[in-house]
Image (tube, rainbow, N blue to C red; front, side):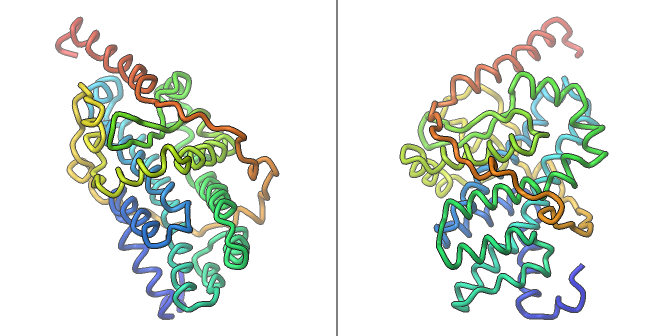
Amino acid sequence: MYGDDSFDPYIHYIINTTRKHNKDNISRTKAYQNFYLENPEIKWAFLASMVSRNAGWNMTDLHLQPFKKILGKKERDQLFMTYERANWLIFSDAFPQLLVYNLSKQAEKPLFHLLKKFHVSSFMIEQWMLFWERQERDKLMIALIINEQNVIQGPVVKQTYFQYHVFNQLPYIMQNFLRLNAVLFPTSSSEVFGSYVHGFTNISKRIGLGVRLANILYSPNVYDKSLYFAKTQEHTGSRRDYEPYLSSHYPYAPMLRVLYPVIKHQDNIRKDWWKTGGIPSKWWQTPKETSLEDMKKTYYRRRDLLFGYYYMKYAMRPDW
């Protein structure tokens, strides 16, 4: 993919470091978080680590009894691959950008021309140069949100396999309709913040969700609590990471690495989405006000419905 340029010391370092940390959801989440702790001016990295935690929890949820009974193994495997492919693809595009930024800081000069070797969009190369000159942290964060959602639009959301086997199937349609999926920002107390995922296949809605989540995470009442949680709670991929703080009565899924092997992904030639798509002005707009509702009650009320359905079916049909 990289040709003879892979022998360049910078390119070689970026390739190897990205591959090292892109093995699974656990390694990606830790890499984002560790980068943020060393470079807190890159606000997107902490957001990415927290969203990545949620991807891991969604993966292991598929091994809880309600999911195992309601969904067949094939359906659960397909949902897992949706989470895994998007998680892997975003990291493979974003982490080289973070590494090049770090190298630029060390060299005390911009090295963002290196990003062309990794097929990063010309949009992001321009945004990194602007950030280097102006240090507009929020603008870079929104730019990275816009970029990541465009990166997965073709290879995941619009890809024929995922369209047919996931997004057009009843489990996804019902989950979307009932809003059973959410991105949660736990704290080391009983508070949980975040937002529901609705209309995932619509890129504008995903970008809007990303910006909304950023506003929530970096609000004064949430940031310190979530950062403390992230720094003190090792990510295992199981909701056991945070549910004990909620006195949850639900069973916990095993840790992610107990359930899933390392997946080898095909890294197809990437297209520059910026050259064919462009950006509607609404993608740059931030919500005027973001609700900081504690989601514990509403999210677990929906979870009660799922587990209640399973227990009712099991009571009626113990062999189910």
